[in-house]
Image 1: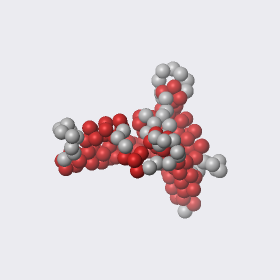
Image 2: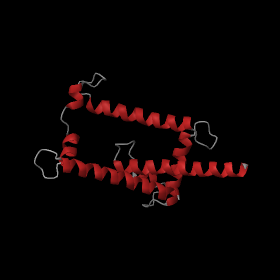
Image 3: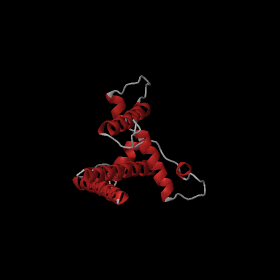
Image 4: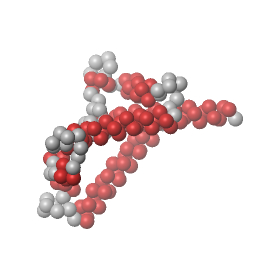
Length: 162
């Protein structure tokens, strides 16, 4: 019976470690929208111009160690919650810094709804026929695209944990 619990724990830790690694890779691709941007140089530890599976694994291990605040080699709900909470706080701070036009440390409705290059680019991507409005069909296409992206992330996560 103890053997079954030990195996379950190892499998859970491996899945969690893989998930942390997948998030890191996604952050690197996202260019910083979901966390700090990873550079090729940071991942290419031996500076040979190529990133190996071992270098990815080392990076995932370092992220795991950073989240494992008590150093016991396992991630608890509390440790993962803290890691995600810290990440969320950094994202909120970046959002306020980006949108706070009068630098008062707060966002007004005017600042939140002000036109932005990023918002205009997003609207333009959704407005496929470029008529200045988003139809129900264009909106549905955007939702389907987002669901496909989420599905691909989940599929990649499953592959990463195998």
